[in-house]
Structures are given as C-alpha cells and as structure tokens.
Length: 545
Ligand code: MFK
Image 1 (cartoon, rainbow, N blue to C red):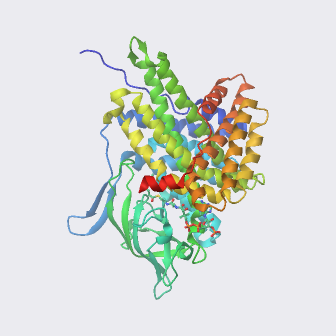
Image 2: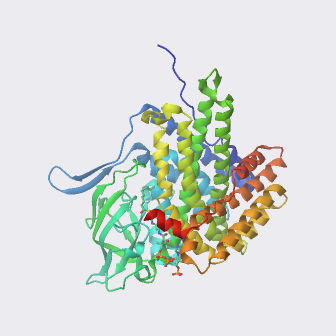
Image 3: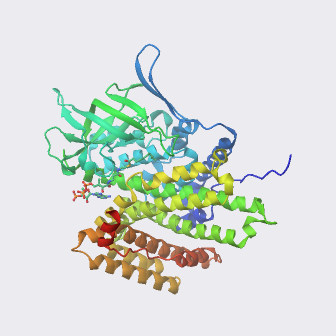
C-alpha cells in the first residue's frame, strides 16, 4: 500500500483548552474552580470518546414510527446513542442545575460545561437550551404553582426525574414574526385551557413539557394578544394523544436532532401569567437560548480550529508540514484570533447573565446584558459558518468527505445564524436594545475593560465606537435607513466589545508572563472593527428592481 495520511487527532477538550483555563482562572475563586474541575474533566473525556466513537461507527439519524403493526398511532422516535446518553450526562454533571445555583458564577460554570459538551452531544444541547430557557421564563413569571411543578424536573440531577422542555413558537408563517401565531387557546367546560394548532419547528418533541405561544380565543390580532402557556406532553409513559407528530424535518445539518412538525389537538395548557403579552413573557427564554447559541457556536469553532491545527502538523506538502508553510500558518492564526474574540464575547454574556440574575451586577450591566446578548448571538453565528468553512478548506479534499466527520461541522454551523432568530432579526433586536441605555452601558463597560491595557487598542476601539454612535445619531428620524444599517452596526459593536475583552485578557495574561493573548488582540484589531454600511437606499431599490 502507498502513502497513508494520518488523520487529525483531537486533544483532550478540557485539558488542552488554554482559553477556558485562563478564563476560569481569571474569574473564579480557587475553591469554585476545584469544585468544577471534576465535571469539566468528565465532559472533556466524554467529548473525546464521542469523537473517537464517531470515527468507528456508522452515523445514524432519529427515526419516527407513527403507527404500530396493528394500526395504533404511536409516534415513537428512536434516538441516536448520544441522545440516549444525553439525560445521563446532563444530570450527572449538573449541566443545567449548575446554572440555577444561587451564586454569581452559576451561569459561567454552566456554560463552561455546555462548551465542552456541545459538539459531542449531537445538538442534544438544543432542547437543553430550551429547558434552561423555560426554567428561566417560569422563574421570571413568578407563577408559584408552575415553578413548584416543573423546576425540580428541569433542574434535576437525577435522570429518573429529569424533564426536557420545548419552546413552541414557530408556525408556518415563519419563525421571526411570531405575531402571526395561529394556534388558539380555548377553555373547555371545566375551565381547562387547551391548545389547538400546528407548530412547525419543535426541536424538543421528545421532551416532557414545553412553553407555547397561543392566541386565547377571542383575543385580537398581533403579538400583544398572544399568551404564553405551559404544557406537558406525557401521560405517564405514553405521549398524550392531543399531541400528534406529523413528521421529522429533513434538515441541512443537526441531523441527529429530531426536529418535528406537530399538531396540537386540544393539549391541556396553563398560562404562565396574564393572557396577553406572551412575547414579553417569553423574552427571558429567548435571551437564555441565544446565549446557548453563542456558546455552542464558539464550541463548534473551537472543534474546527483544533482539528485544522492538529492536521497542519501531520500533513506534509511541498516538503514541509502545513504548519510551517507561511500562508497556511497565517490562515490558522487569523482564524484563531477571530475565534478568541468570539470566545471572549460569548463567555462575557454568560458571566453577565449570572451577575444580573444573582443581583450582583453593576447598575449599567442590565442594559449591557440586554445589548450584548443579541450581539454575541448574531456575530458568533455568522463567524461559526465562516470559520468552519475555512477549517474544512485546511484539509483540502478530505474536508469535503463525509466520513472524515468534517463536513458535518459546517452543515451544523449554519443553524447558529438561523436558530433563535436570524442575523437580521437579531440586528433589529440590537437596535431595540440601543434605543434604551445600551450604547452608554457598552461604553462604560468598554472603558473598564480597557483600563491598564494596550493604549493602541483603546484608541482604535474608541474611534470605532464613536463612528457607531454617530451612525446611530445621524438617522434617528429615518427608520428605514437605520434598519438597513442595523447589521453593520451590530457587527461593529460586537467587534468593539470583543476587542476590549481581548485587551482585558491580554493585560491579565501579560502580567503573568503570557504574551499570547496580546498577539490575538493585535491580530483581531488588524482585521478591523468597522463594518458600518454606507446606506444607499436608492441603490438598494435599483439593485432589487
Ligand atoms: C439547534 C436547532 C436546530 C433546529 C432548526 C432550527 C430552525 C429554525 C427554527 C426557528 O424558527 S427558530 C426561530 C425562533 N424564533 C425566534 O427566535 C423569534 C425571532 N423573532 C424575534 O425575536 C422578534 O424580535 C420578536 C418575535 C421578539 C418580535 O416580537 P414583536 O411582538 O413583534 O416585538 P415587540 O412588540 O417589539 O416586542 C414585544 C415585547 O417583547 C416588548 O416589550 P414591551 O411589551 O414591554 O414593550 C419588547 O421589548 C420585548 N422583547 C422583544 N424581544 C426581547 C424583548 N425583551 C427582552 N429581550 C428580548 N430579546
């Protein structure tokens, strides 16, 4: 046999992750780090095992069986191995429970677990995100009866009592404009609310509960008239007959995740709060799932870059390993710098969420979290696609071959820019946050992050923030122009925040003799901060004519 190329090897995801180690060392007290270490080691072990298992087993997809041999409707879904393992891994390592502990580091400790587990979970993290979001929305609702009923299950550390929750918003009208929701809530003769309608993207249909938007019968049109309901899907060990699974979606990626189209045919439901303003009530859930989206996007980038870097040490071309080829090394370093910025921003949102929920946030940090959540979601979602695509290219033709496991990274990454709101919807959400104190809060935070750091970075970031602010100021009366520029504005602000966070990390690391984060900062700044679009509305109209 002739030449055989060595496959890329995945180093231990926790032991080898310099960024996560540095982040936790900078932010967590030693006693908390020690307590966390066992779970992170175990999740890293699991991730490594899952990667090796995928290389030696045939890939499977979930299978829906709607009818049994005797004509009974069963709607049974067979799950992949990783999905069957999901509840055990989740509860054993307190992936969700950790985020709801009563201290300010709870969310950071949760998302460190999520980051290590995500790729191995085969997007079991999708319904976990929904469950986390449902727990958060229930707490925000103050509905004692539902909190007491559902939270012990959602946050359980025991597989036997653990429940997954879905988030049933999207209908055939689309996922963005939920004001078009057609699902109706009717009260039966006993006063029990029941939901009737069709939900179009249900990614946690194997779960035991869900939060669903529905229009109470007789309520008006639009999103303000929607209400948010809690439902349960199981009657003992049987799925409730009022929940019908029509089919599983055939998706570009996330193929292990059984995303379903469902019908609700009178499913019993309980309102979380008032019978209106359901979007406002579901917002805490959206913001949590968007944070998951950002952290999972960063986890996919980490996996793609780690494999590409390892491969560059094993693949020889033109007489040298790829990593010694100047242009290939440059490409990898560029990817690393962008990834480090995204990592810093996603985990800052996680930390902020913990501080805000715990009540230990500084006054400006509530508005900061409100702004950084959509910024992190939208920027990391786009970047994941770009970096996973670049990583595949680093493997040449092998990156295009299914059983290397590499194309799946790119297909899966595409979901981050769609799931939980597209880039444009999130850009408009950032505008919503900017109409409040968002920009002032960001400038206050950036000034603090830059203290004692690289003065060159501070100048560049301040100049970009000034440009963003004038962009915002220049057009308050011209809503269409403001909206047309919202994506460029959002990405500029995300990059400014990421650069300031890299500067903070660089200063901290430099004081400990590590010059590497400063190199990431320089490279990141070199890629530019400004993405502000020059809005020519007339040209846009001409180009679309
Ligand atoms: C891994 C999974 C793979 C499976 C494949 C997935 C494929 C995709 C499936 C999907 O469809 S995912 C899409 C899920 N859908 C979304 O994420 C919703 C996207 N749309 C939005 O986020 C819109 O901005 C939104 C629905 C929220 C707009 O709703 P409205 O009612 O038209 O907006 P409005 O009136 O501005 O907001 C209503 C209230 O909510 C306001 O509060 P007030 O009533 O007090 O004024 C807003 O301030 C508040 N609000 C909205 N967004 C908020 C928020 N509050 C806090 N945070 C937010 N993010």
